[in-house]
Each structure stands twice: as structure tokens, then as C-alpha cells.
Length: 444
Image 1 (cartoon, one colour):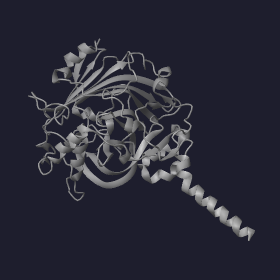
Image 2 (cartoon, helix red, strand yellow):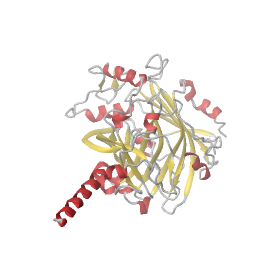
Image 3 (cartoon, rainbow, N blue to C red):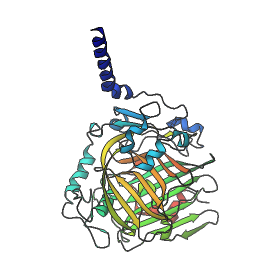
Image 4 (cartoon, rainbow, N blue to C red):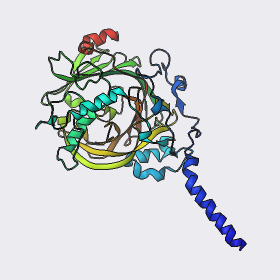
């Protein structure tokens, strides 16, 4: 009799443990690795952080309280549940990084509820209203260009059997909910297999000529050159790269190649770049190519697009606005927020491969951000593995606070900490001329 009562209590204890283990592990105050640096702590490791060159500050729209203070449902990794439990919820190469702290450094993934972070406000609703107007109106032409588009999601309704779904998805990615223009102040740390580190401070700017959500009209005018968007990333430090200024224009005409220039301060000359250099790495030995920043930055009709299906992932699409950084490891963005999302998986295969063969992109099914990407080299081997932790300002516009690109073939990683992500700077097209940018940054 005593034995049966004891057995019954033992079974109750086991059930209690299994039932409540999620709550036990879901405590939001899990111990952080003492090597992890957050926000202002970075100033002791990164020259210029919080000293006027690059300053940790909220996005222009202000912090989003809903995304910064989410309730953690469960955690995996450092001081939490074993990472093996979520192997099926991560892209394979990213899982291999996170599951090998002895090689890449400690990491933790915190699950939150995507639907709990609401409401999203008037600007999001305006964007959705514009998106509905695109149904049956916006199309992709035979050259891969977007037609009859002005604002919102180009293709809010998708048929997975549609042979054009791959290219429609990448257009949804390009026209995802974000500010009309933005400035992003970035510290990028590169680390090689021997532990050697180098910092590059960068001022990145962008201006969209259509899909504008804050402006009185969704299409910027005048636009005589028919530009889709402007992009520049000015090097602030180190001194030997200071003033280096890549600048390119993306055109609406799918047949028209990007115009790409770079100002090289050591020779005080502007040099025109070949569009083939989109597959080259950024200056300073970074692990992003011109085609792979933020997951994907390539020209749509330079690729063959394939839809690979859907995959449920723990996707860091609503992360908190803090810069986690580990000087002793190779990764950043530790201890971030992730949400379960049934992501679209698409493949971009180069029509004219030079350094790269293809990219696998994982897109959120509603926000269309690319939080994970895997790039293959010319031999088809997994090469650059990227993870972008997306934030949201109080207007729900897309921001970023941490991102890494890992060259897994040579164990070389670039980690970006975004000190400031500011939307809607009210730029004009004249702000994106080489002469104007050189004056602003006193290019030597």
C-alpha cells in the first residue's frame, strides 16, 4: 500500500516537472554570460562608442515598448534549455553556429509571442490599406521589373502554386514596411580565426523613391533618372579608411544596371565600379557583399528565383533594441527575442556567377524581413551565414540593432552593432550626390 502511494506521488512529481518546466526556464532574468556586453558597456571595447563618433541612442521614432518588453515564453542556449530541442526551428547552418559555443561563443534564444506585440499603430494600418489596393493591379513584367506599384506590399495575396511566387516574394521583401529614408550608425567588428579584431565605424544612409509611407505622396518627385533608391555607406573609422565612400543608385528599369561609384581618399579620386562587383565584399575585409547586406541587396533580375516552400522557424523579427556583443566569441545578438513564424523560403541563383552561386533567404510571412540567409560560394558550398535581428521603432518601422555575417569556410565573422537606426530623415535626392556627401564628411 505504501509502495503504491509512493509511486503515485512520484508520478505526480514527474508530471508537475514536465508541465512547469517551460515556466521554470522561461524566467526573463536568466543569468547572462559575463562576457556579453550590452549598450553602454560596449564603450570599453569599441573606440568611439558613446563618444560622439557612434553613439548608442534610440531610433528616431523612439523605442517600441511592446517589442522591448515582451514576455519570454521559453529560452534555449546559455543557462537555459538545450539548443538541440529547437534544431528543427532554425536553418541548418545557423543552428550549427548556435549549438557550438566552444567554437563560436555562447548564445541564447528567447521565444516570445508574435501576436502579443500589438497594436501597431496608424502608419502600419495606412500601409495595409495601400497594400489592399495592389491586389490584381501590381504585376511583374517579363524582365522581372515591378509594374504599377506606388506603395504598400506589392503582392499581399500569394498563391504558393504560382510559378512567379519566388520573384513576387523578393519584391515584397524590398517594399516591406520601413521608413521613407533612414540613417544607420554602425560599428562593425571583424574577427578572424586567430582572434584578431578590427573595427570599422560606418554611417549608412538610404532613400526610397517609391513606397513612401510618411510623405504626402508615395512617389518622390521629381525623379528624372527614374531611380528606385539611393544607398551609401560612409566609413568614419579607422583612419586609413576614413572618407571611403561607396555610393550606388538602383533604377526602376530592370534593364538598367546599377550606377556604382566609390570615393577613395588615398588617391582623392572617384572611381566607377563595375556591376560585377556586387558579388565582392565591402571595403575593410567585411563578410557582407554588396548583394548580401540585410540578407539581400541584389538587383532582382540578376537572379533566377525559386520558391522552396515554407518552414516554421524561430525568427528574430521582433527583437529588442539592445546591442549584445561578445568580445571573446565570434557572434553578436545573444539573448535576443525570437517568434515562431511559418517563413517563406526562396532561392536566388545568380545568372552570371563570379564569386557566389546562390542565396537562400528566409522571409517572414507578414513583415517580409529576411532574418536568416545562407550564401553559397562559386562551388556551391555554404559560405556566408547571416542572422539579422530586426527591431521596430514606436511607429513600427523596420530597424536593426545587431547583425552578423559568418564566413564559415575560413572562420571569419563580421558583427554589426547598430548604435542608431533613424527613419524618415526627410532626405532629398540632392543629398545623395557624391559632391554633397564628400562635403558632409570632409573627405580628405
